[in-house]
Amino acid sequence: MSSPNRKLSYSLAINEAFHQTMEQDDSVMLIGQGVKSPWYVGNTALGLISRFGEARVIDTPVSENAMTGAAVGAALAGMRPVVVHPRMDFMLYAFDPIINEAANWHYMNGGRLPVPVVVWGVINRAGEQGAQHSQALHAMFAHVPGLKVVMPATPYDAKGLMVAAIRDDNPVVFIDDRWLYNTEEHVPEEIYSVPIGKGIVRRKGKDITVVAVSYLVKEALQAAEILAQDGIEVEVVDPRTIKPLDEELILDSVRKTGRAVIADGGWKSYGVAAEISAVIAENCLSSLKSNIVRVTLPDLPAPASRTLEQAYYPRAAEIVAAVRKALL
Image 1 (tube, helix red, strand yellow):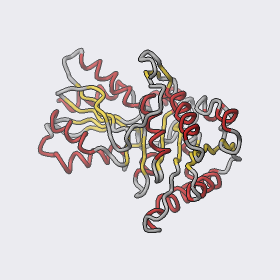
Image 2: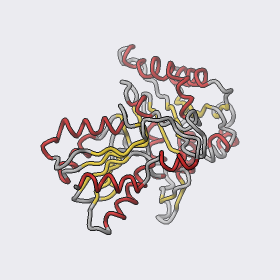
Image 3: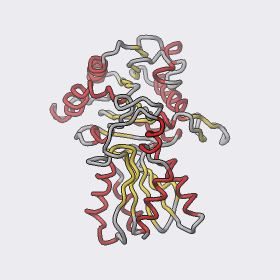
Image 4: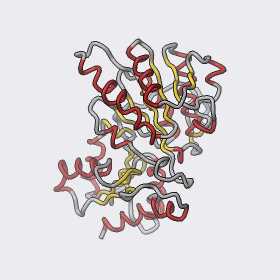
């Protein structure tokens, strides 16, 4: 058993998940752009090539469609590949193998052949990268039947959900946010998994529910600390998986508090915050004491100005304002 004082960063928690799953199972492999380069994948692939070799850790040319198609084919042939897209924006080139092939294959062959592929996309925000390098496209994948979509917010969940995704017999889209890579917490040294489709209450409260996704979980917890100074008790719910969504966990919390704020780092229209709001409205409208409030990106491309970025990306202050609005 690992020491309770052992801490690991989010990125190294992902790295440990790879080392342990690849050691346990020879069919696990990593394929994608820049798996040799810290500039692309940080330290998430640290030591994998030297330990497992270039037959199982494959650095590809810049061809998102081809490398993803190769990963889906490898999954159909009995491997358990993880295909990494260091910038989620360019997963758009891989829509065909992800959506037309991987998502539909198990259904179309009558359940005879699984597709155990993990499509790992990294969201890069801010840093004056502009509209083509900063997009959070998770809602697009969550819309598709046949895909599971996980978005861990903590190092513990990053490791556990990556292990669960690799072990799953059908396609999982694993989405992380580079803003989380340096966060640290206790992560057990032994291998473990976090169940896909099960959320968690990060902080208990009685006055209002904040459902927060990915990097906004950390911001929601900061907002809850600020609001606690005024006697406002915020319950923070982290879905961890956005498809399938842990609806009962969210609904139980909203039925208790009677108010809801949804915080998601994607665009407002037709996004994850809209879906969660609809689930609440359809199932416990009579429990609501006020309107649901969404905290999201505006429906605008990401700016390339640092000053505009500060206004564009929601943080704890925006969640605090949303909670106060819902409590009026």
